[in-house]
Image (cartoon, rainbow, N blue to C red; front, top):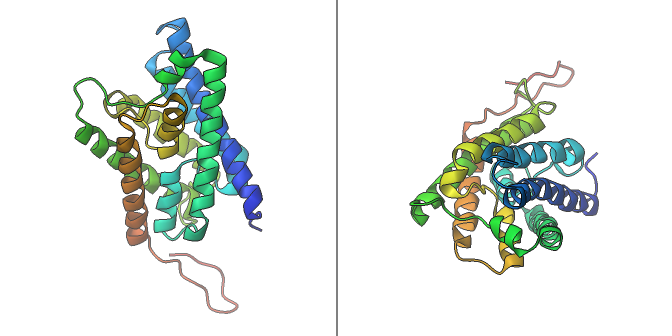
Length: 237
């Protein structure tokens, strides 16, 4: 049975907090202890495997979105009710803001400022936005396949690891270019707490557009499940 909406919202808020806080701690280590303490790969691992851990913890409760673009993408793919998207978004932002506030209190304004996304040196805002959109599109395709498509042999049990590995990979190879958000809440939360919204539109528009397109692509490419006749063995296409 699907848990009631209040319980799912709480799981989204707590899971988003944990996901962001683990990733932000990697940034805090790099800022306070020097680049040698945590390399860029370590920061990417914090976000990727932090996400995987929170999906393992809460995926069976809320679905483990922790990302407004994923929620929108799954709604576009007709794998999630659109009417519940706004409560999920509010929960995700609340969890993210809580993580940013704890980082600000624990490590100071300099560390919080370092968690705010910005394009890499020499990367235009247009290029950063396109990269964010493309990587989020691909991310939603992965999420929809491993978490919602029962015909996929890696469905369900492998989903947290596959999703976390995608974010680890995307943050490693694209993070230095685009800022590596792929998640509007991940960018909006520290920007709100830090009062820095200079490049924020990139990380709202890019991931949301990419997420919606990824969901639509999944809906178009997905083969319909074959419903068995009465008394027949269950089969899928």
